[in-house]
Every structure is written in C-alpha cells, then in structure tokens.
Image (cartoon, rainbow, N blue to C red; front, side, top):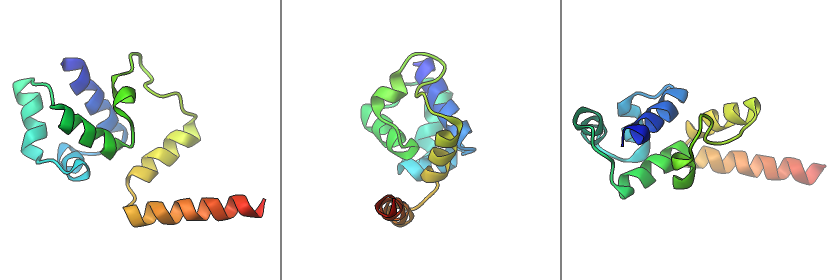
Length: 105
C-alpha cells in the first residue's frame, strides 16, 4: 500500500504536479487523493486507472518493481512530461504533425 502511494508521489513530482493538479488531470476530487495519504489507504482500482491515464502510463507500469518503472531515454522522458501537460486537441495536433513528418521522409 505504501509503495503504491510512493510510486504515485514519484510520478506526480516528476511532473511538478501538486496533489490538486493530479486530481484535476485524473478527474478525481482532491480530497480523495489527500485521504489516501492521511489515512494511508489504498486507492480503488477505478481511481488507479484514472491516475494512470493522467500520467500516460498503464496499470502494469505503475506496479512494476524497481527504481525505473519504464526504461526511457532522457529525450523520451522530456517528451512524455510535456505530452501529459497538453490538451487532447494539442495531443492530436502533435500526432498529426509527427505523421506528416514521417511521410516526408
């Protein structure tokens, strides 16, 4: 239980998000997230899925053992951090841009 909260904290801090910002990105009440830490409780599966969606990761990535949950290069980590701050419309634009860049090669 503590490990999952520590993992969530790590992902949140990597993005420089407050608990409130995580709540906004995940579509959860901020009080729910605070209560996990205050009461040392485990988030529900539904909440974990929303948290993972906010972070742009899968549930399995959240539960991977080890220091580095996903092996990414530094540029990939930078891109992922920036990606999670984009709106859905901006993400679609970026994907379209990448597709168009690939067509030119």
